[in-house]
Image (cartoon, rainbow, N blue to C red; front, side, top):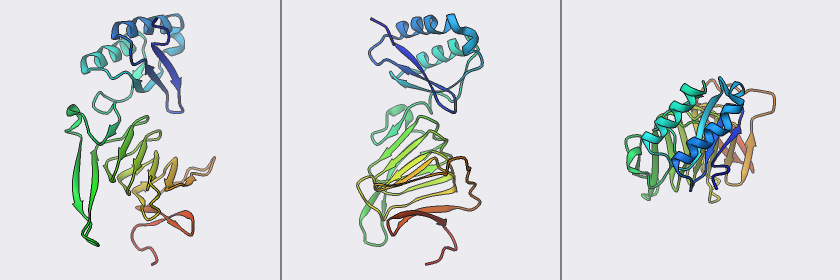
Length: 223
């Protein structure tokens, strides 16, 4: 049975597609035609933000995106390199985009892991580390960062970030532009106010104080 080999789901940013893990790629293409062709007008101009589920080869990815864009006038946002979630134990084809290194904590001499990602983290992607995370780029809405340690974004942070996943309230989340959908430190959560888009003008850091997450400028903050 190839039912539900491909499923469309919607987000604020656009559509994403879930591909069933155990299905052959040819069956996925066939069901894509069966699902889209009867409603081609509905899908025209739609933006596809992500592909989830079955991992595609570069050739399969190009073929699938070609069908979406050339036959059904849809638009895929992104490329093959940025498609898959990044976690410790990165796959070979992604090694040019991120590196895991060891740094030394100058305060107590203990070693901490830092997970570096160069480039934009797109909607639907997960970056997960058992140390710190450093993003050399932007984090888009719908992207998710999860670190046992702290998180630093050298760009715009507009996604979801969770530091101190094992209960460390001394971790922090910092960015050049901190405009998140949600922040979490340990089990403490804060969200952007509904209906109000917060605009950061200086680099900021989220920390826990008196059981609450507060955001303050990285430089020039009161001690």
